[in-house]
Figure 1 (spheres, rainbow, N blue to C red):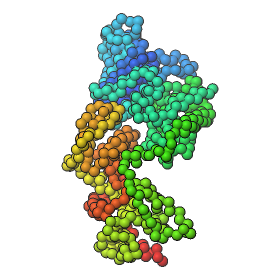
Figure 2: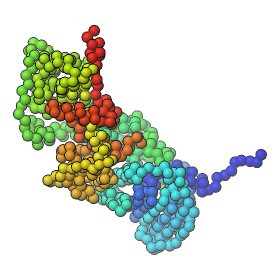
Figure 3: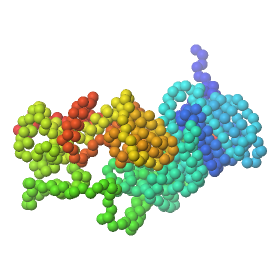
Figure 4: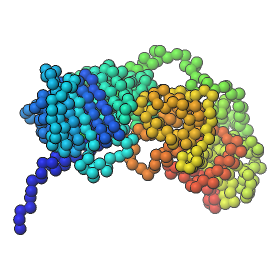
Length: 613
Ligand code: ADP
Ligand code: MG
């Protein structure tokens, strides 16, 4: 039998190696941006077409390359950044493996124009599938322009695995954010399909963060600064009251490189201990500077995990300095706080005062302990907070005491008689609201308990889906258009959803640039809910969600339904409750919300009987 081991041809080896460095257009963006930074650029422009699938171009004004270097740069293991293994421990550059350009050139059409300051003429090179197909002197500004076209043109299997333009563009934007936030002293521009997404002038760290994340984050930032022998920490953390249930903006940088570090993340979260609402995540932008030799750089080029030499101490320092900054901030906040009595929540301040509603507890007995008495005497409907009842036992326990909390539907008072008739009724209209959360109705077989919020969500979800897929909805014209300021990348997300948003009733007067104008709304949407709704749609699109079974249209309908639905705590009229019941049971899937939560339960007579044993 003949020998079977062969050496792979160069171009195959290169393609395989390329797979390690370049997985998607965003990886090319990262490598090219990092090369431009290593070349000491003062200004960097990123241009992409079709989310990088057609073109990724990076223009820098850095030091450029000689003709020989330009050719060498595309050889595997060609780097100007280290020459001995020892250099690895003093690394101050982003690249050092000399793999990126060779990899990119193996799987795309690459064109480079580059010139050093001391040269009159620059060099232009065209490389396809690792082969230089063209080279000539060229007139070009100092620096480097590198264009990567038709990524994976010769690896169809990989090209097939690229996600939609929306997803790939989001990946690119994330890389861009990370690099730009680590280097505020460099000016950046980012253009996608001829529209400018970011134009970031050189400035401070704070300016850079605000320019990227939007001016709304400015007021939410608390500065942090700490210097020890091991580490220098600076940056910003989010004020606790702005923490969100969604992932939050969480950025660590180590020596000007974006990193992920779950252990240090934990240190930050631990420092917020007790200050955050349940399940909320803090935002942070933390820059850690450590001596280069104390950080393990022998990492994979595309990975963002790093190892610090003395992680336990660093953990303690990070936690202490975040705690310190938070403490400092709350002291300042107290110093400047106004008379809190005069502070009305925004919502309240704008709404008309409501006449106090007097609620009398007919069973009131001053000698009896009443734990839940406080909320029986609230002065307005709005301030009502329902006590969460998780189990059925809890719901029924103390029903007597809570009876005044049963909102009386406009028709009948809840007295002994109606309560009695509830158990008797067969096809009656006995419907009432409990704890401003549940709609209770009687059935032949027993009791129907509907979660008002979830039921309405299901109804709206199906209605919106119909509008999104078949018919166009009616919209309510606004007398005064709503205006919103949003950063370009968020406007872009809305642009991508424009058709869908319009088919449910949104009318946009302007959705071209940062200043959004809306002149029409879906029928059931209140003007005050527009901003939170659009923001939650944007957040939802931005989050890195695992691929799920929901289509774009599904998700939009889910978002809108959950924002527009009647909330827990809202008091309902009989007519509204009847409508909800009718519409709910006209739904295709009345049992569950779109997210799969139970909408109603049925308590049978047998179940009730068993409770009386
Ligand atoms: P690495 O960055 O790991 O050295 P790359 O393949 O990314 O490897 O780049 C190879 C070499 O090409 C770099 O070491 C650098 O000398 C040169 N180079 C790449 N991009 C640029 C650029 N934009 N300006 C100047 N030189 C560059
Ligand atoms: Mg590099």
